[in-house]
Length: 359
Ligand code: SF4
Image 1 (cartoon, rainbow, N blue to C red):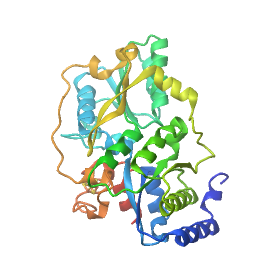
Image 2 (spheres, rainbow, N blue to C red; image 1 turned 135 degrees about the vertical axis):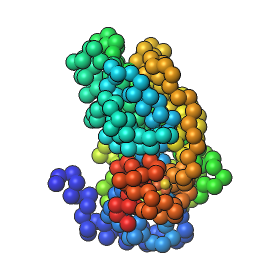
Image 3 (tube, rainbow, N blue to C red; image 1 turned 90 degrees about the vertical axis):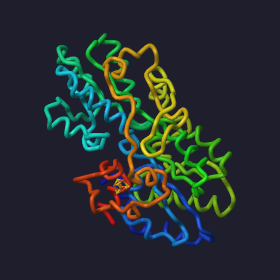
């Protein structure tokens, strides 16, 4: 397949792994930010092709995994407390555990919950069903925020009164800073997520690389992309350099996607946000600007939960790259994709799901 097979060629993979081995003199720990990259690494066995002295740890870049239980609790309350509500969500949020259950259970108990592929699907429902309240669970990193912003802006232009969102969008750079500030952190370099940087560009990563002395390599998702990212990360580490390098040039420009960024800025403002398993992170989320606050479901609906019970699992340590899934006592025993205890086992981008599928 054009634009895919080229990046999976065995010969290129052999050349890249040999090149990595030839420059690696010391032990290094690198974190790939994105769960999509984690899945590629596990799926293609790339970690097994690297020298033992390179340790890959898996980051928090799975939007499903970091959406807090409180957001699920509030979503379930909205979906179940109002008969006229149709609650719209991406499919992989259905099985993410809230404090007392998940959206799939609420649906089984009679709530009108629909799986959609885009916020624009939810917007269309709102246009076609004016007697219903359509609520969209807006999750995701910088990649999905432009589509949510577009849906809200269109809803405003159309003066739709029956459309709103639960806004749970999050941003990557503040989470990287939070991880690096942790005394437990042993991260020495990052593979940044190529699709996030396609939207945002990579200027925000430059001060992080400089301040924390970590190379950051913007990396794609195919095997040769990831090995190329690792090569450039190791090369900088061995040479004592700490810059941002773009290895995903076929998609990423330094300044990002300007129309998408303009749309985000029009609709959202940056706020502090709670991340599942990590805690509160300053300036790490997007909320609706005052002008669009009418579309905020958490303000439109009353009697929503305001706090959640603490989870006792080690999912948070997995999301911070402090432990690997197979170190969790629940892994593969009472936590499996069919019966997940934590979000990293649910999502198609979760690290635990990747280990369960491929290891
Ligand atoms: S195996 Fe399950 S309980 Fe353990 S860290 Fe992963 S998702 Fe959480």
